[in-house]
Image (cartoon, rainbow, N blue to C red; front, side, top):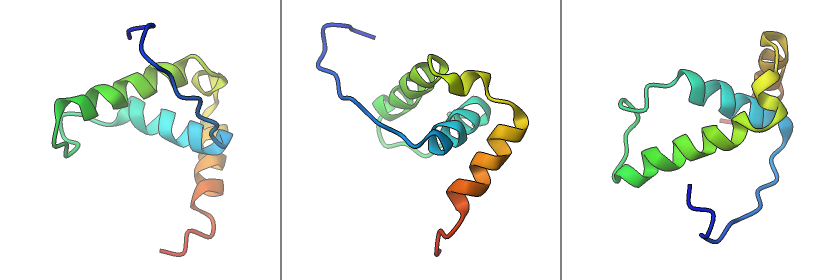
Length: 76
């Protein structure tokens, strides 16, 4: 990643971060519908950033609890 490019601060609920980290580790990005290769790269960049957080050390139980929290009261 080019460190000279502008950055955006992103504040995520920890449960969202755990769910996204877990999904990005398992998903086949070649099967995810994209309209531009940059979208796949952006997902990989997100995974890289999440690997630098405590999400990378989350246990299976923490991830399952996060999934339950995120999906609670979805309404759809």
